[in-house]
Image (cartoon, rainbow, N blue to C red; front, side, top):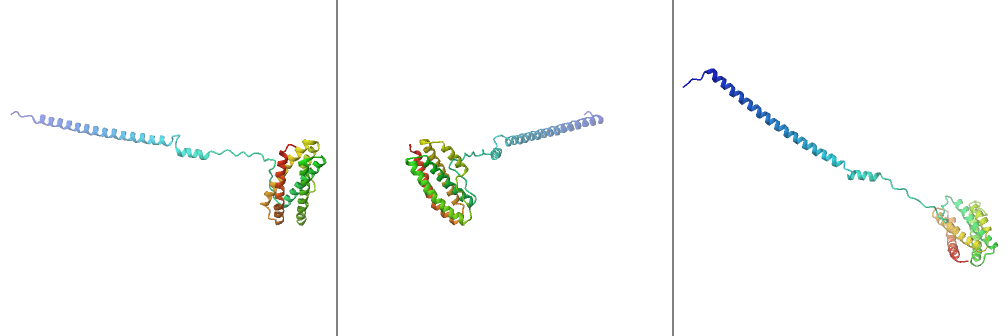
Length: 233
């Protein structure tokens, strides 16, 4: 056998050891790179998922945001119509009510006297006579209560009806009768509203009794006024 020099054998062994070390290092680096790539891929997946969740929570169709928007909307304000000719506000005190009721009596009495002066006939004449009679009676009843409570009542029409009377004074014949009956409807509806409103407010037994007594009379006047106003006079 040939003998291999010792120096050559040592050199060969060193070369083999270096190659083995390089292979191991390469394998380790490859595994490390694979793990890093896998980790990066996982991170990218999680980031994508997170971004997807964020996008879904900010979608315009989100019910929470829609609910908040709906809650912040303000409904349009109600539009109230103007009060009709028969509407009236309740009086805050008993003396105010008594003075208003006294004016109401005088309005009907004075306009009815004007109607008789104008020579109205038929239903209009009958109505005028009834107004004078019934409202004179209610004036006396109210005056007794007012005297007891030291309230001074007016003895003439209010300013509004003085102006109405001045306008009616210029009319005659059927034009006057039509205006007279139409005004009776307006006035008695307003008086009826006032009576009913104050009856729910006053604590005064005398006024409660007065309102209970005159309300049916005013209601009958209103019904007759409407009937006569609709007639072709």
